[in-house]
Length: 56
Image (cartoon, rainbow, N blue to C red):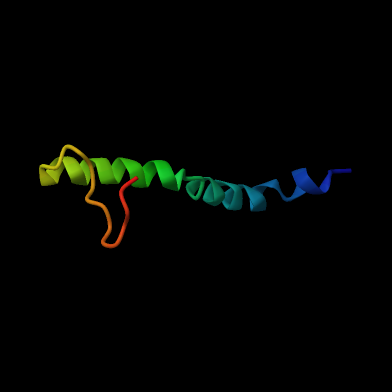
């Protein structure tokens, strides 16, 4: 007799593949984006601080 997992594997595979699309390191992607935008804007020091922020 087949196990439930092997029996329905063909149905679960597309769901598993979709979940891999959402495995994103958001912080890393945003950091890369900010670096690229800073470079393109001609600001090598990085993005400008937000209004009202206090420098450390």
